[in-house]
Image (cartoon, rainbow, N blue to C red):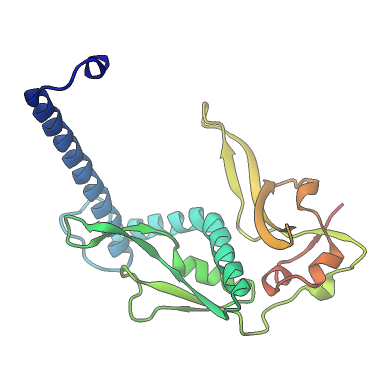
Length: 240
């Protein structure tokens, strides 16, 4: 590389370098297409659709893998969903669409747009209902590139405010959001974290804290009484 900084590339060197770069880009593209195809095959199998040229796993195993992936991603996706919902509420909207995929800019080898998973909308729909939201899956495109989950908050929802004593303090952990924190060197689990609802800068947000919570996620009861519906729907636990 130092030689390149000392003299201008000859026409031959420049052409050779460009050819190597093009070959490298081609290999990356083929590798990404292969990953995309494997992901699409797995998701198709989970929906009962036949796979093409794949006989490594059966339908039951594929479905189990998709379910495990959905549950693993749920804590992060729930946080992202609440962020989108809060933004919609601030804009005085009554509903929001959460799209399952983010589409890429080019077409893969299988002829479909490259897509990146944003939400596992089936699992997310079930979880949001527990927080008092009305959810509706897109019936026309259940697992297509433009599939989405429509979330609305027109209904009354579930409220646990009657359990709140304004003079006491509480923590508000979200169900099924526990995640392991592993050591990057040893790969061993060193702690567990849980997502909590907390007021920050005059807004309710989702933050992660230790499973045995710290003072950072303790909320005065008086703050919960006037909180958004999704906060009131969380089962409160009195802080020690």
